[in-house]
Image (cartoon, rainbow, N blue to C red; front, side):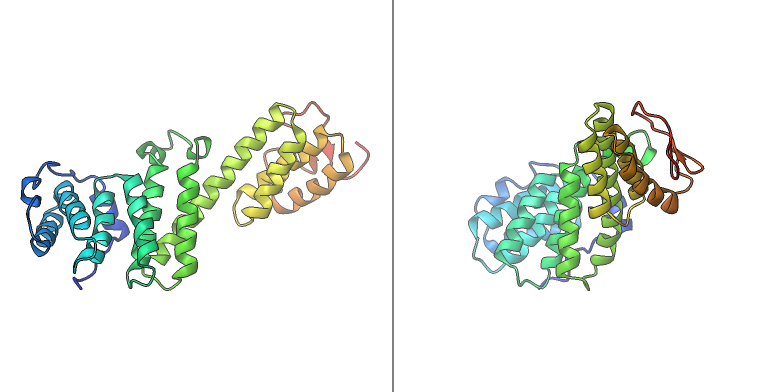
Length: 273
């Protein structure tokens, strides 16, 4: 088997994402009657030269014309990489899922899991995120959730994979993004006086993302939600936890909670107020 797949490190990823895809029409005529081995060799040459669109054309032709050939399995794996390099995230994920389904025992199946997660990661983010000009947690997070699930599955199934350390770091980031998104929804519910829904969102963050900084603000959301519901005793119970875990929370003034959205008096952790 050809030596491994141009393994993707973080530094290589940063460089390759900006490469030109190459000429999309390159090689179309050459694929019409080419034998299997020739197609595969042409695909390898195109990949080595960074002509990823041409490589995809060759690999697609190989996959279509020789689905059970000598190079079929490896071509399907490299096609995932080709789609990724031309930034076709949907095709990358589809090809990776297909490979995982057809070849679950392949020695490099962890690579397919990894690229499937990377494609969802890229689909869910924009370059402006790195400039702090937008908050990813305020956008639709369908692709972000896909990446979170994909990387989680990679780590569970292949904890010793060379791709697992990077996946774990991305999971931490994604978990924080998803937790912040829940808090955005909780704040929306507080503004709309949907206090039960706000409390549930806060509890969801604590239950499902317990290792994120967002759990502290989730406690604040719950305090305010309970205030809106007129449940002061329950609000004080949660306030005690908030003071213990985040005494410098911006809704606290010492041991007193100051509501942000709810029309209610500040709540002291102890006393009748």
